[in-house]
Image 1 (cartoon, rainbow, N blue to C red):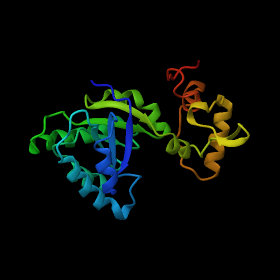
Image 2: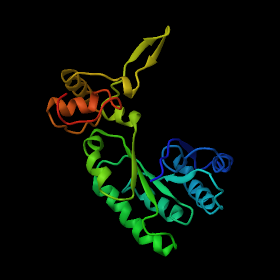
Image 3: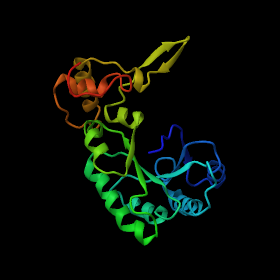
Image 4: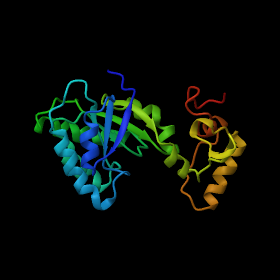
Length: 231
């Protein structure tokens, strides 16, 4: 599988940005129909993206992925109807929490690819993990379909699930938010933050109570292998 190192989000309802992105020197572009597009612009985005996918692809131009709306949402069906066509190389699936969600998209693609005269299995899936439940299920999600070409971590939505646990830090004389790669909280601290998030009315899925599972959720993500066992 070809390594894709650079990815660029492109709002699917902005024709000029789509035209420019198709010729960029990036490994892949994500033509967006999800969070980057307002509800009243989604139909326009589907049309523009469908037309863009039909353009002949120049040599060395970026792979064409489309970020659809959440699996199971009615908008997803309209997205797939519009963009599963020749020229589509992959889908970005947001807010995935379980392997069955990926299998659902896989089954739809397997049905539609031959009808569109596309190679069976040709459309790949980049999976966005954006919740604690999705993170805990990440190994199963990654292994559930040969279409899965990678996982991406949605730090902002993940933080909201936990009541936005990030804190500002003093750096170079200014306050800046701590990113996901700097969030270091011990197990006792993670329990307290989960309690406060619940008190504020945020939806926080029930987690395993072992210290290792809590460390997985609040540890230094991206700087060491993820494990469900205590360090």
